[in-house]
Length: 391
DNA sequence: GAAGCGTGGCG
DNA sequence: TCGCCAAGCTT
Image 1 (cartoon, rainbow, N blue to C red):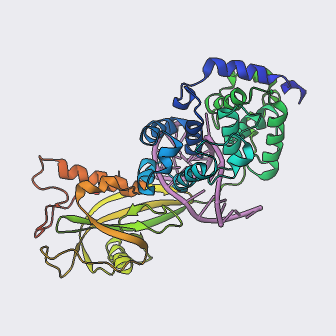
Image 2 (cartoon, rainbow, N blue to C red):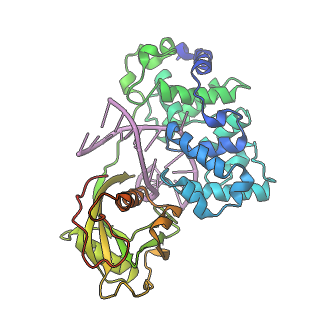
C-alpha cells in the first residue's frame, strides 16, 4: 500500500478548502465538542447541527446541564433517538462537576470513563477539543481507509476495525490530530460517501488502492445485514373530561423514561381496535371503547418496521363529569391526565409525537364543521370518521 | 460477540 | 416501497 503513504497532506488541504461551518467549530469549546460528538453517534451532522443549537442554548455549560432535570434533557433530545445518550450525557455532566471541578477532562482515559463515552467519542473529544494526538475512528474513517488502503476484512467487525484503527494511528500527523480527525470524517461524509463515492472529484484518487484495483464498489467489505421484522402496533388516545391519559415508560429498554400513549402489539387474529382495548386494560386497568380511528403511522426502529394504528378511546360506563380515575400501571412508572396544551412539555417517541401533531392540527382547524378530535368534553356524538392518512 | 437501542434521508 | 446507512455505546 505504498501508493497511499502520502495522502494525508492532500486530505488536510482538501479539508482546509471544504470544511463545513458547524456551530461547535467556532470556538471548539470542549463542552460543545462533547455534546456534538454524543449527538453525532449514529446520526448525520446536518441533523446534529439543528439539535445542537437548541440544546446548548438551553444548557450552555457543563454546570447548567448538570443542574437540569432529566425530563427537560429528554425533551431537548426528543426526536433525535437513542435516548440513553441523553441520560448518559446528564449523568456524565454531574460526574464532571463532582469529580473534575466542572471542567471536562482532556485525557483519553478520563473521558473514556464517563458514561456514554466510548472509544470513538473519547478519541474525538481528546483530539478535536484538546488537540491530543488521538484518533477518532467512526464509520466514515472506516470506509475511507477501507477504500484508500484496500482493507479486505469486513470493516464493521473487530478485525477490520482493528486494521483501520492501526492505520489511522500510523498516519496521524503529530500535533494535527484535530484537523486530521475532522478531515477524515468530513471527507467520508462529503466525498468518499457510502454508496455514491464521488471518485471523479476525489483529491485522493491517485492514492486510492481500491480505485487503482477497480474495486471501489467492493470496499468496504460489508457484513451480512439483519432482517427487518414488520410489526403492527395499536395505541390509544384516551380522552376524558377534556384531558388525555399519558404514561411514563419504564427506566430501561426502548424509549426509557419517555412518555407515551398506552398500547402494544396486535396479536394474530386481532383487529387494531380489539388490540388497543386489550392493551389498555392490561397496562392501566381501564375499561375503554374505541370511538374512532385517528391515524395510521409508519415508522421503523432498529430491527422493526412498525405500523402504528392510533385510536381515540373513551372510558366505558363513566360519565364525562366524573373525575378522571386512577390507573393500575403495569407497563409504566407514572401517569397523568394532561390538558392538550400540556403535551408539548413531555418527550414522546417520534411516532406518538406525530400523532399528537396530527390531532393538534385538527383542533386548530376552524373551518371544519366538526373537529377530527373533540377534546372539549361532552363527547355525546362521535366525530366524523377521519381519513386514515399516513403521516 | 451479538443484540438492543431511534430516526430520517436517500437511491 | 424497501433496504441501507449514519462523527456508537452498553450489556
